Image (tube, rainbow, N blue to C red; front, side):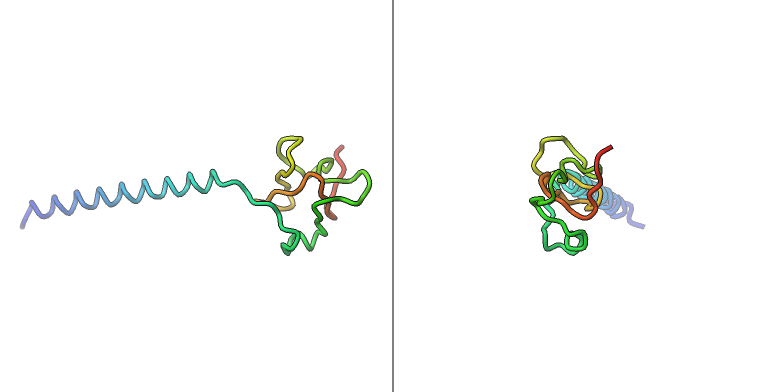
Length: 100
């Protein structure tokens, strides 16, 4: 049995394992840090909800909708109807629910 060769294999496996762990951690960090994109009005989910970026319904915009999330005053914010996407604060859709 060649114990020197066995140690080299173990060292190589440790290096490969550590390398894989670092690569996975960097990928996860990049995914978490990614900013969600704006909802396209041609997106099937947007079409189904009649989403528009500029409301024509008096007094009803995403800004005063219960489903809008994020910081007030931002031009585009997350919405619970469209996970992973940002909607226009001045927009509107069929899911509009007045803030209580």
